[in-house]
Amino acid sequence: MMLRMPPWGSVSRDGDPPLPYLNFSRAEWAALRANVPLSLSEEDIAALRGRNEPVSMADIAEVYLPLSRLLNLYVMASRGLNSMVESAFLGCPRISVPFIIGIAGSVGVGKSTFARLLQAVLSRWPDHPRVDLVTTDGFLLPTRVLEERNLMQRKGFPESYDLRRMIGFLAAVKAGERLQEVPLYSHEAYDIVPDRFQTVDRPDILIFEGLNVLQTGTDRSMVASDYFDFSIYLDATTSDIESWYVERFLLLQRTAFRKPTSYFHHYADLSPAEAGQVAGRIWNRINLPNLEANILPTRERARLIMRKARSHAINEVRLRYL
Image (cartoon, rainbow, N blue to C red; front, top):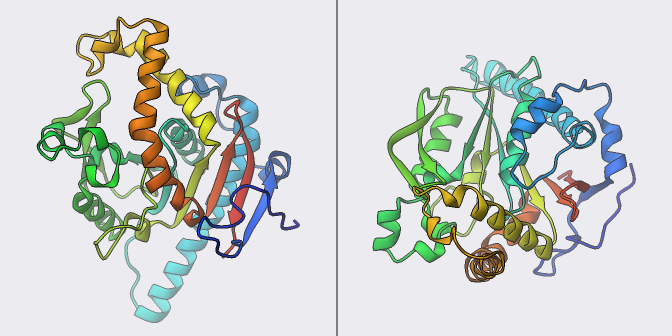
């Protein structure tokens, strides 16, 4: 496979030399599926796709199955290396610990759907059937705390998370500790649910998905990505992501926002034009600044960058080989 440097992302935004990525078109990436069987049905895909994110059987076969094959190779290699080091050097085997995959990208780019589909495909492999998915939403500070700190307009920015708890969770999981709890987050209430938790108990693979999971700008000695065995950045042009965000907002305004219990219920009676204007203002005031300042600068830290076209289909893949 020849190394090709496409126009996007070939040089870091600080002007550093090009990073060593192997670049694949969709067709080239699809060819790497080899003989991995198609393991999801149309019904499976329908249950996993997002509200405004079309996903087809072709997407599973041409994008997710090659990715699952690559990740399976990484998982098995990691297990083999750990076993060799622990038995040959330390002289005593230890318990198996989860292989952690970090998934980063902007609000509206489709991380949640991508993560759910990847979880479903990876869990079909017989060598690692237990695949858990945790999102960083559960580590957001409660609304009460955000209001006290005047951070409600910066929700999703690094300072809006309980980073100490997040890093503690990842450290415990990577140490093989059992029954780790993650607070549950309600998108309807737009807040952490009191006394409700997701329990993670030594899965084979843990997918950890969130906006800023590849960020390094912190005064802490450890960051989330220190615990990742593999990392993926879901990419698209900023204009496409904004369009998807507005489209999703308009869809939610006609559906979920109509529930009286929704935090955004006050938007339910807006006209489509008014709702579009509100979505645009939220994007420009909160999500775009967060993308430009905190998320996009971490893209080249990912081991794999998957770039989406306007149709939501992934059409370019970059694999960092160093």
